[in-house]
Image (cartoon, rainbow, N blue to C red; front, side, top):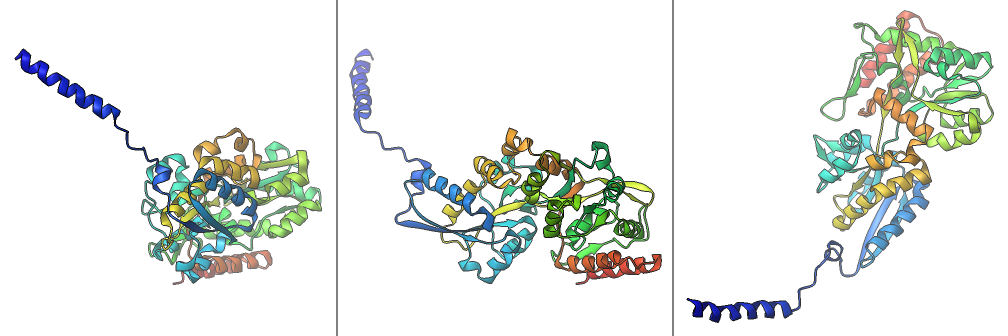
Length: 412
């Protein structure tokens, strides 16, 4: 036995020594595995205002994957109309595109987006609501990019003590006392939702993804449709109130005729420049409805990055979308564009938390919901608010106008 053992041992040792002397096969990194012969051509669509930002992000992406040759082109395309542009020629559309979350179902139904591969890291890295906004039936179809497409209260601290901003009635009175205005855009159903959202009256998208349901004209419940309409009519008549669009709001702020208003993050820089040390932002106030103080609601929205299902470079397009939406580039987006991150770590950064507008938006998020509305929502609401602003209503006519609006919203 011993003899056989000693004869066998050198053979084993020799085999080990030979193996140790052989050259180990090279380790291929994940980046090297994806290197493709020739040039990878990618097209990106995003907002015109993002041009400088996206240029930096593209340069960073090229540096990260320096072993690959890229030709990456950028084309300005509004997030709000991205789907329309894409549907016009899906197969020749951008490989990567930025769009508003309310377009997600349309894009999925059209086959423009495929489920995100390896979605668990995306879910863990981003705010739950932003993941929900990027999903259909619990399946993730796009990558969250921002969590700031909502609205809240802006106010000039010179005129409004901290306690006064909790009440819309008080703010209207203060504005009128100074011969100024509180502004809100009633020519958009997006903002008008504020008055109905926390009353028990509902509006939303049916399961068909096209038509709406609406109880804004309801005659039942603690708060009825006519209660909201009466409150809006009262606000419309107030000397401290004005309804104006974005351009009118900014003009009024600059010429000091508007000292507070409901608006979004996109105007934060302009307002801070105008009001300087008196710049203030907070969640929306309460308003009086049916003898109660009701917290004004809001629609929330998110920007998403999608990968075209028809892209000839889907693998690289997915990597680019992931790069655009990663933590560092969401921080960069906040620094350069003031847009609130959906990435949890980026949103928790010192820079983001120091922004009054982002803080106000996060405060309002408790009273907001995702905008999931069919196309028939917008025009009936505008027609209703135009009548309210005309200041020529009776209770009977208000109910008739509510019924007409609701019928228009739910129309097939």
